[in-house]
Image 1 (spheres, rainbow, N blue to C red):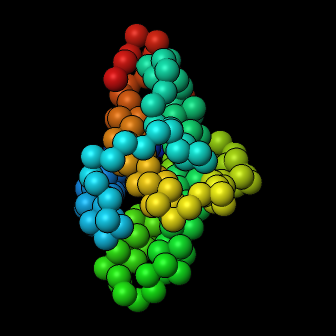
Image 2 (image 1 turned 120 degrees about the horizontal axis):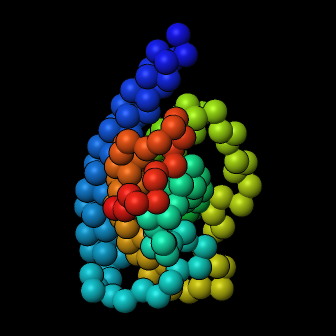
Length: 195
C-alpha cells in the first residue's frame, strides 16, 4: 500500500511539474509580448540597459545544480509572490498615469499578473504534495522606490518584466530538474545531476 501511495505521489508530482513547465513557457511568451507593448507604449528603447532593479528577485543563481528540489520550489515561490506584488503596483501606476487611454497595456499587465498568481498557486500545490509547510508571504515584494522620477519608474517596470521573463525560463528548468529520477522520495536531485 505504501508503495502504491509513493508511486501515486510521484506521478502526481511529475504531472504537476509537466503542467508547470507548460505554464512557465506560456507565461514567458506572454511576458515577451508584454515587454514589446510596454516598451512601445512607455516610449522606451527596447535595447535600454537596466541595472539590477531594487526589490526585484534575480533569476540567476550560483551553483544551480547543487540546489535541492525544495530549495528550487521555495525560491520560485518567493519570486512569484514578489512579482505578484510588483505587477500589481505596475498595474496601479499604469492606470494612474494613463487611465483608460491605454487599455491594451493594462489588459496585458493584468493577464500576466493573473498568470503569475496562478503559477505561485501551482508551486504551493507542489510544496503541499511534498508535505512542506508554506512560507508566509511577509515582505513579498516592496513597491518601487518612491524617490524615482517618471522615467526611472518606466525603466524600473522594464527591469521587472525582463527579470520575470528570466524567471519563467529558470522555473521551467527547475521543474524539469524535479522530474528527473532521484534516490528516495525527496525532491532533492543527486549531486551528479545538473541542468
